[in-house]
Length: 220
Image (cartoon, rainbow, N blue to C red; front, side, top):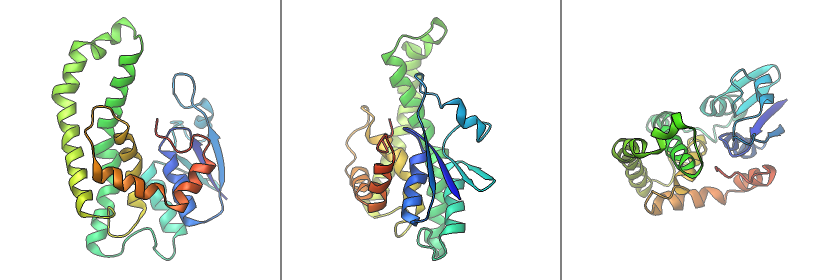
């Protein structure tokens, strides 16, 4: 039996959505974050790192979004509905599956941390990160690189309806960082990114996943 260990406001919503797209039986176990936004200790009983998403299939424990999506597609998508077969689309599929976490998310996470630290009192040792030095590092190093990714994504989606040909698990993988991107106050308007997110948000499986997730699938 498949069991998704789903943490609120996390990447595990991707897997919930994918399971709904597949239309297969699964069990959902929902975990809430602690007051400091860390994952609860119960998740470490499933996987040593205690981070979501975690999928169990019998005695098999699988972590990392892209790995879980590949596992589901390989084992529960016999008609290859959610992975392209042409060489060109397959290359894009693999690229975006890794780009989401390997290239884009580090900038988004750093930006989110800076925003949250700026709203709350921090210990003396951490104040350089939220003070002038930290802000300059973000402004001069992180922000320009994030802007490059933003422009890259906006241009790509202006020319493509999906990330790898037709709808695939690559779109599910990319949806989480794009939703986060649209929540950031320091990002200019992204009409093509926004249009893509809106298009994905009306898929029946996406809406079904929102209804089953107590947090409604929100990123933050």
